[in-house]
Image 1: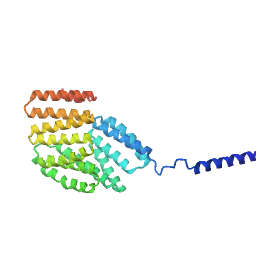
Image 2: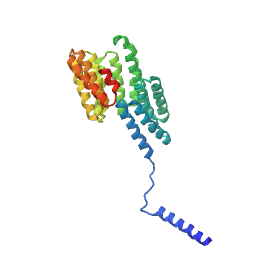
Image 3: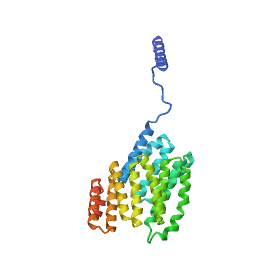
Image 4: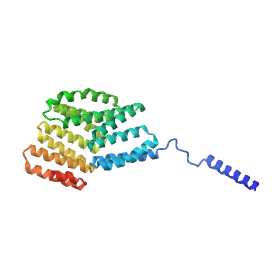
Amino acid sequence: MKKIKDIITAASFIIIFVFSACSTAPKKASEVFTNRMIAANQLNLANQTATQGRYNDALLFLEEARRLALSTDDPPLRIKTSLSRGNILFALGRHDEAFDEWESAAEEADASGEAAIAALSRIYTIRGELVLLSINTEGGFKENDNAARVYIPRILREMSLGRSDSLTTAAGCETLSLAFKQMGRWQEAERNAERALAIHEKGRFLEDAAYDWFLIASIRSLSGNYESAMNALWNSIAFDRRAENGFGLANSWQAMGEVHKKFGQPAEAETAFRRAAEIYRAIGLESRAEELE
């Protein structure tokens, strides 16, 4: 029996040695990316779902991305899931939770040496504050000139810290545009939106480019340049069609209706609102469709 055991042990050793030494055996990878790739894909899915206005579904997709990011202890992925969650929570009106997520992302990015992502996190915080400022505006833009002015140096500082990343630069330009828009400084607002647009067009970020045109349309409409605003909205629609972004398309058609109303074109406004309602209903946002109708 002992002899048999010795033979088996020897055979096992030979098999292990041969397979370890065989020149045709595949080499072990120096690093494994399987779960991180799944997490990144899940994060992209969550972001795409959010751009379609399906925020609750996006949060569900994000849970798995976050779990995998935590399990692999990958700092950039951990931070990006926090950023994405903050954006979705803000869109849902859960503003305090959103600011907590962005602050947490900035702190972790600083600690991990991820300067560009840290800057992006703080830009999102500033953008959120500007959006709330515009929502709470009761009068014209002059009343909020000083309130919005304080954000300019903060945005420029974060853009300088994140200048190595083009998407951080684009986000900074969009946020500058929102600040100047709130101040009623239309030319500077549009110029910065165009800077963001150039980056997004070059990188073929279709939905982001569509939003940039939407922002430009908003600036032109507020300044009373309705015909030019209409042209910008057509450009926004063109990009969202290429991206098959139903939520963006519905928003642009709704804005088109508002511009037609300002232009004194009620029939055209009604047609645009009906088009927006059809798209909202087609993507499952029945309540938005009913509001328009």
